[in-house]
Length: 346
Length: 174
Image (cartoon, rainbow over all chains, first blue to last red; front, side, top):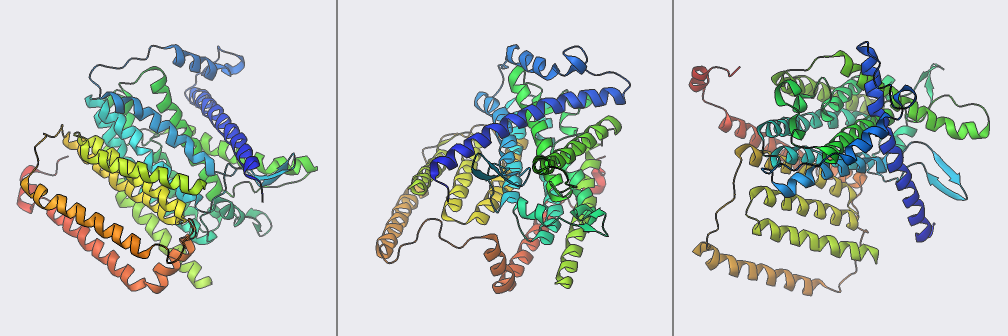
């Protein structure tokens, strides 16, 4: 049993590191997106600031800080200011239960590679993401402008609809693992089939669930092809039309932080978490699991950007019909079949 | 000690949110205070050891039902409500009702205090226990409840849906 002081110190250190790493990852996924989409469209993307434009996120950050922060006169002020904060708070909170590797011992402290290991981690993430709707909805409403309101309405309707198929797609995995703890879920995916196919959930009966999750996750994070809330051709910029400077940047940060959370969750639930081939020296064996985890998250983020560069946008009625008439029944069917198979086997 | 302090703090937030819900004049502020009440209730459940109930409270009440409330307020664009001096019914029955409720709660607490100590966080509320209770001991009531909810949803759809003739007149809206 650890003493309270060491617990507080270790948790603080881990929180600071996690937030720092997450925010850096957010900044560089913006850079990655601009680069990749640029190359898809036969352009170069950012090249001026630093080698390969690597310092572009820093320049953007400074620009956001020094821009004039305009508050339009017609807004509902309290909520107008609170909305971006809510967005960013909920987006950053979910990282606290995401494990990125096994237990490690550093300087005599034995600790898991996550801020806190709770046995309802998945439910916490679902709860926090469902609260994230408020940031967008309140931003749309408090801006007191028609584009913002329409964007906010679209966003909240879309997020509530897709949350159902998202949640249902996860239940199959929960039935297989028998636990809400992300660590247990990852541990249940160790080993291989026939000597070479990893026993990840995506290859282990949850392929359909993975695709339902993938599409719902795209819609939850308001990304192409589901970016109707910010469809610039019809709504200017959607719910953040009236925002500028750092407040706008906060929505931007929240969106990319949510993308990273979704990618981490996909890796943990369907792609086997930090499991992967491990060899070599002792320090390599300690680092490789984290490397595999990060590599899988990177691949998932790349897929996000790739799809953004490839697909056009849905129409709004298509988006809703897709959620309720296709994804939802598919997720229910997957859930029933998984339940039956697990019940018959045991 | 820390448990007790946190429990009291969130209890106070909960009550303050509930009072604010009544005092605020703008519907959206009231809805947001209700969200604060729901969330601090979830924290209270968590501190009592009912982690599953806490998570479900946040997901369903704060995250889904209240989103619909906010959504409706946004759609209707409800403005500030007018202050009235209060109806006579509220004064005649409300104040005695509140007093009676308070007395009842206080009386129950005094009657039951000191019988046996329940430690904070010692209640059985893990997902396993709740799942076992729902799908073994209380399977029939659970299923009947879900049937009731289904009927309620169908009723809502029937009530909200336009009559046939009207739909044909206005077209399908596309």
